[in-house]
Length: 341
Image (tube, rainbow, N blue to C red):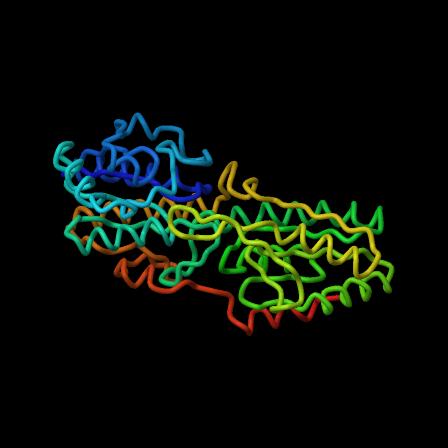
């Protein structure tokens, strides 16, 4: 069997570990051959490939990013997209695809499977917001990077008696903000699941200064204020119809400074959370996902995604995997609220 592999959406630590796991087991145990499609769904749309054999994956386990490249290309952006994918597979002799990505990449994979394309999904998102798996690789690395950054910001906040607002990733789900904020002792954590009251945020700021400490506010990029309490901006749409976010930390910086008179600074961690060496956990999880994905391909079990349930990697339908986002439940956020102020 000849299997195509692609990585779509935002890059994250662990992608190369998946690719390595797929190829090492697929070639070594099953005797399959592989081809890599460049830059997500653009590769099969435009027949842009690279060889993918054991030599190609040697030494990539600890590397961040993806040797295949990535993009947010949507194969359904044009009417002939699915037909072009099938034609590329026919011309290259590819029998099946392994798509490594998040909500958008795997959503496209699910639609292609419904149209007869044999495809298997591997969950990838640092936001940890895919409901069918307990964890996605990249999340642990992002949390560790954010936690270290917040630890460092505590010292400069105290030295200058400033409010520091730290923006982390999380468009629809606040998992990174919740985990890193609690781990690093943030005084306020703001997440997309709970619209915030700017007056309460400012009260927490003053409460913190009243105890002779400087506050750290951790905010997910998708967090929003209660309607009518703050002015917010909206940006243009990406290829999958998502609004490009416009900097909630900068807005909070302005509002907090204006309402409290306290010196306030915003720090956006941004893409630094995606880059660099994956943690041991992410390498382990990504490798296991790759091993189980090639098992599914060998079994001819298409239209599934590999998922972590407890310590077991199991297969779930792609449609189920992308049907609903996993968001922070109320009871977990209430645990964090104990430390606000």
